[in-house]
Length: 267
Picture 1 (cartoon, rainbow, N blue to C red):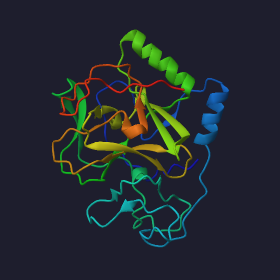
Picture 2: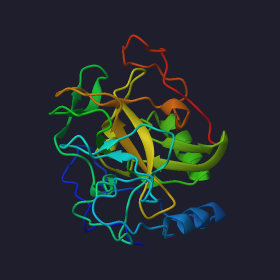
Picture 3: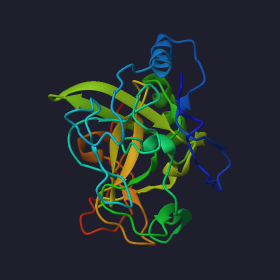
C-alpha cells in the first residue's frame, strides 16, 4: 500500500528506548481472525480521488470535503466540524505542491519539543512557537492493535505497574459506532506519545484518512496556543477517544479537573 513515505518528514527523536516510527504500523501477527481483518484494512487502498487542479479549496467541487482552511496564510487549519477529514492522495490530480488538502500525510509540525513537565512529573510535549487554532500538531502513532491484543497489553501494564499509552478511537455515524481504531505507542511510536492528558486541553483528536480505511489519529490545536505551552488533549476525546486507564488520579491541575483519568473497557 502506498503511504506516501517519500513525502513524510519526521526529524524528531525521543529519549525512551523504543522503536521510533513515522506513522502507525501493524502489530506483529498472532494468526487470529481479528488480526487478518485488521491487516486487510491496513493493506487496503481508498480509491476515491479528486480531479481538481490547484489547492482543492472548493468543497463543492472536491469530493474530499474541504475540511482544511488555507486562508491563514502561514498555516493550514482544520475546521472543527463533525464531518470526516479525508486528505488528497497520490491518486488525486491536484497539485501536490499547492493543494492545501494535504497535511497529516507530511508528518508532525516543526518547533515541537520534548521536555520534563513540571505539572505531570513526566516527559511532556510543548511548542516553541505559537500555534493557531486548528493547526496540526502530529499523529498519535504506534502499533495498530486488535481488541484482544489491546486487552492483553492493558492487563500486562497493570500487573507490572507500567505506564499505559493505548488509545481507542471510536467513530460514530448517527450515534452508531462505525469503526474502532486502537493504537499503542509503548513499543513503537512517535512524539505523539508525550502529550499528557488535561481536563481542560489545548488540543483535540480527529480521524484523518489519506489512502487507507484505517485513519491516522491526528492531534490539532483546540485554541490558539502560545509559545512554550505544554500540549495536552483530553483522553476522553469528547466521546470519541477512550483511554484505557482504570481510574488513576489526574494531575492536570486545571480548574475543570475531575480528579481522575478517563477509563473504559474494550468491547
